Each structure stands twice: as structure tokens, then as C-alpha cells.
Length: 335
Image (cartoon, rainbow, N blue to C red; front, side, top):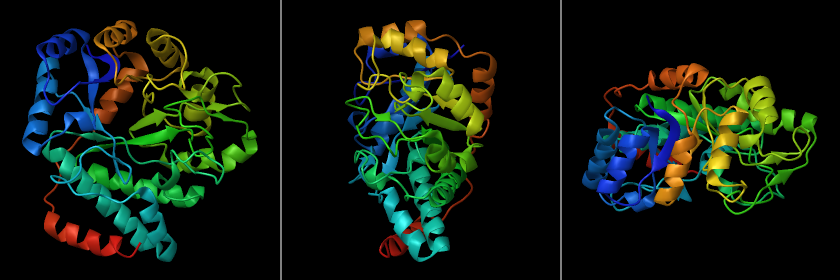
């Protein structure tokens, strides 16, 4: 049975050692990075090899947002705008902004589905503030919860229409973080009432989405020590409770420097807090094994959520890609 783990590969094709490791570890899914991407043909072969290594149609994820975060890009794939571009259109005409967000996501889904990728770590519902670290910046759709939630919902709908599952991130919010969690642990000292009316409020309308990713951010008003990923309070009372998210919950990458302890300790803390899946990327083979060894097979509510999410995978309906690209290009020029 698949383990509560998402992991990655080192290069453009799987090595014999990777195939053997994946067969033994049996991760629930895989994630693609730029180092894994060269051409459509190569990428299709890689995703096929990943699934073959575990003997099932395992989900394959990618961070394909547009702007600064886009793993598939020119010359083989289009360059997409950052999330703020949809927000700018929305400010001028709400329906135009929502249409552009849906269309951009639908086109991204078309690109991904064609190469065997069926999960995109998108949309963001982070609500940035002026004093925050720029790690979110123009990746965000706006600075008000209602606007962010509306555009995020359109993006999620576009991905689903194209046969790609959306991952809502970074729950319960990365917008106030004054540090990049790739490099340091962000600490947010904002009071609960403000968080509920801003950061958390953007996620509540999106609580029915099938998958979500946590934020490696400490919210001192609720847990003065542990970041949301490893905080029982944040996962149970805020993410599952106040926000009401009952989808499959994965950590952000546990190799990021925001977290402390060994990788095995981080994985245990993530699962102990109530996350369903551990996302581990960019590790050595020894690190991969150490994480895989502490990740149990999916069971109980975690398996229920995983099965429900994968049950939403669909072959996309016919879609006029050329016309959609023309429409999207014309709309993007207005931003």
C-alpha cells in the first residue's frame, strides 16, 4: 500500500537505483522540478517510468504557477504570467479577471496533462502584506481575502477542467511571513482576530478543494513554537477546524530550512500534527530512505482523503487550444 510520502527524482530519467528505491518505498506520489524537464517526449517518458516503478497510476505533481514559479517553460511550453496579473485584470473588470484566471489554468492543465502530470501545486490563497518577505509577492492574486479566494477558485476550476488536480497553498497563509521559509523560519505575531479576518478568511471559501499544502510559518497567537506544518494546534484547530479544510493535506517540502531536527524527525512531526502526506524533495539517497522509513502506509482518514482526491481525476473534455491561447494572449495584454 502506498506510503504517506511524495518524493522526487534527480534528473531527466530514473536511474536503476531510483527505480529500486521507489519500488521498495512505494511513495503515494512524485513531484517534478526543472532539473527533470527537457522536452515533452523526455518528460512523458519520465512520468511513465515513475508510475511503472510503483506499479500504479501514481499522482505526479509540479509547481506550475506562472511568473517566477514555472517548472515547464520555453521553448517547449508557454510562459505564463504571475498571479498578480489576474488580480490586475480583476480590478478593472471582475469577470475578465476570473475568465483570464480560469483560462490560464486550463491551458496550464493542457500542457501538464499531455506529459503525464496530473496535479499542480496551485492555486495560492496567500494574502500578502506590505512588510512581508517577497517570497510570495506577485505570486499572489491580491491583497484582500475575497478577491484572492475568487481568483483562486477560478484557477482551481480551470485545472480540474483540464484533468489536473489543484493543490491549495500555503494553508493557513504565507502572506505575512517576514522570511522565506526555504531559508529561515518565519514567525507571525499577528492577533487571532486579524488572522481570521484576513489570512485565514481567504482559505475558507476554498475548503472543499481536494488537496492542500501547509505553510512552514509560526503563528504565535496560537502556537508560539511550532510552524503550522508540525503544529497539532494549527492543523487541527485552524486548518481542519476554523478553515474547515477536509482535503488531503501535504506538508510543504520538509527539507526547507524553516524546519528543524533531522529529516526523520521532521517527517514524524508533520504526520503527528495531522498532515496526511510528507513532501520531501532535493535529498540524498540516505535522506530519502530515512524519510521513507518513518512514513507509514496511508490509512484511515488519510487514505479516505487520498482516494477522494484521486477520484476526481478526469480525462479532459475536447478543448480548442489554439483559440484559447489567442483569447488568453489578448486578455493578458490588458493587465
